[in-house]
Image (tube, rainbow, N blue to C red; front, side, top):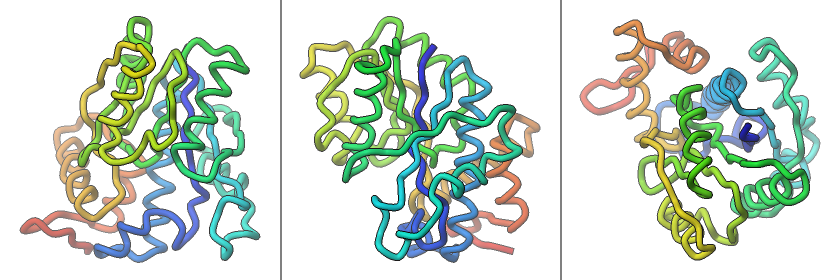
Length: 244
């Protein structure tokens, strides 16, 4: 069983997805709502898979000063309340950068808790599904490093059975950097199909038609993200995002 860590920020207005609301039609409050919806879908996909869900939240001391008084764990748990069948295990993130926090989480689980495999999953990859996570677990039986590429050289999934050097490991292009870190450690590296993550308006313009197309075809969709998109009549028209 792979322990799947979702590294989550408290979904507060102005804190999450800044590139998204700065470059598109969403307000900071709407971006926070979308982040919460995607986080719910990602955690639900992990719970439905054969993996073990761990939600690592960024504590107040690692947030900008204006968020120093937030109830960080409660903010994350409130998103998942009523979404998951069981209350998830939660732990604080440790480290000053995303790479450090991902590395500390993965290394702790592998070396201190003795798990067989660990995965770091982005909460902004709403199209990840149970089958993706279970497929990655199968690959991890043969390859110590499994990466899920996203657009612009990013990753949506980093799976490991052995530690690697995480210092600067998510520097762009992260998928190449992480692959080299795996090879530098002497490990075989395998890959998952590409899935988009949502951090910018361009990312959202990619995801919205995909989700709408899947809904039209009556295929499985990330229900919370799809509902949020539908409620706001968010569409792509003439290459641009529009809201009803």
